[in-house]
Length: 433
Image (tube, rainbow, N blue to C red; front, side, top):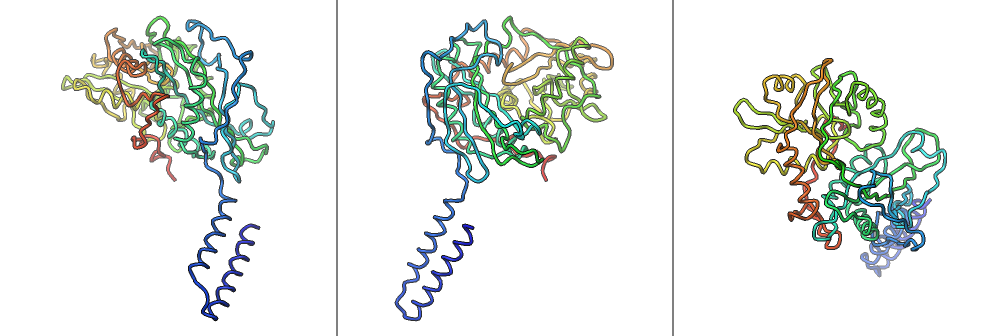
């Protein structure tokens, strides 16, 4: 309807222009300006709105409704939530609506919402840390924004301006800053989530979505020091495959692993080491990326992590940070390459398998103490002064402001690098059309 009306008005202007031209009394610049003004006004009424942090509305929780903050040693992951949450709704026709920070509360969705039937949703995981100087910092938050947009494109959910969304998250963290633990082994976990809200049962992308953010104070992942995990390595169980969505952070990638987790426990293991293909290519461990430290035939140590180009591995922010950090250590060669169980078992037999560990936002690093493969548990060394411990210490120094780093962004000074390299968070080659 709008385009038809625009066409009628444009035709009228052209007719007027022709009439005036015959009289040699018109200025073509004026006519062109009139057309441009009409087109601009029409486009502004139909173009979906972009996410705009300057429109953020804040409703503070009243003192009587604010919750007590539990001691750090009583914090279990994801069970305690702060006093406020951020919500931003989206529609296909209208775009992003006004961002709102309100007191934490349940919200209602239609029973026919697509998220409930077809799992059209995604989430992120990031943290805010209170440093030894009292300042609160986020760790490489634009990497999470880029990865969230990558997942949104695969889930047919709306894209957003990462800097604008991050500004809303920053303000939410500042409002609930008292919830950031005063402890250099704890943090405030940040869970951005997007769900398809359209109340229709047709299998099609949702025309409505909700983007929201929850905050949870979390205690130390290892309250009594590192706890090495044993892994079930069984190629019969597959987490992801080329052409699928293993490189995204969708909830639908996680629910199927709950069943295999129980199978791992039946074998005396904590998690699964995900293998793929006839050569038992190593991909991930549980819900984490994986690193393997080998002693090369030339005597030099090599830190290996599987590459992202297969499309079956999640591009972890901690993974990327470990790669970049250890690449500057002169005593280590860092490789992103394919590695199989055959190579790992051969290295283990030769005494060249030095360490294995997972990496992720929750644990940072998680040492591997054993591999259950081929019906046998193969022990893996977990040295107290090993690489995993060294990486954990170096990362913690950045998190808690002991070492200055552009990776840790102060929520008050807020100097986010807009030119940083986010190449990991693009469609992998195996997933491109």
